[in-house]
Length: 346
Image 1 (cartoon, rainbow, N blue to C red):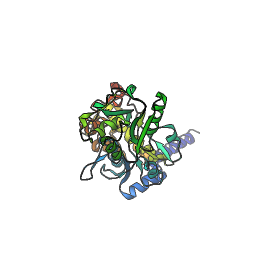
Image 2: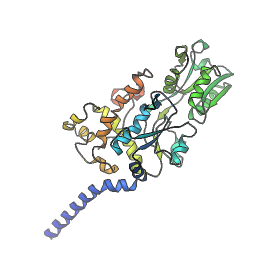
Image 3: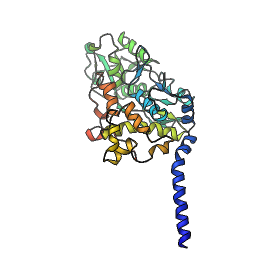
Image 4: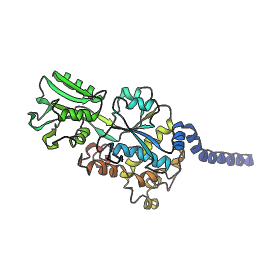
């Protein structure tokens, strides 16, 4: 009997080892998106048509922004190179269709996570990379210093087919204010219309107002009013039906946030392999086999941190240093008074 128990124990141990080493290939085999991405050699990423700080292309076609960095993180994890991303600029109206019709693999385009969108067949939100809220921008000489100053007949520019448009309607209706919506499909059309004086106010997420303000002819002639009228948790979206790809995108973002929490950045990531903290060692691939569950190798998270940086580095590079929103506000870590908080990588 003892011999039989010993043989069974050895067999179970062997099976456990086999399962551990086969998990990665099993996960990779389950993910059609991962398989196709590896075959193509690049990640297809849907972004905005130009929103500084989030997703914006320079004259040479180089894309930068916190939304861009999410896709670059996935490319680093999956393909070993953060530069292997094909960016597709999309309007608010066409963004979800592009994702569900398989034109892109990730939508990382300052998109608000709502119940109706999350419950929609075809869409899965995988996290929040920027906590925002909707506001209003007006001309300094308008006489408006608060949304409470708005009167009947006010005209408001915004994007067509967005939660911004719906929030604007709810806001004015709740105040009993008659207003004229001036809507456009493309963000640059909205900015141009407001700049040309076709509307009294421009409304969108406050981060968007801060970013688009620098595009105006005379930015200093405009102010963003203090009130925030909505909650806008912005984050990446993937197609439903591919749970492994969903996990890869979710945990690529989570790694960036947790790396900042533990002080791991693009400069010191390699040296952190000798850390005494097990959580840090897992982040840099020096302990555990976390990549296997995603169909990836064990350096996937290390590559993200080294090639893209942690969340704080991304925010500083794209938003703070550009003067858009120097104060991180709710996008500060939970340990520093913000609400950035992710599950542990273990």
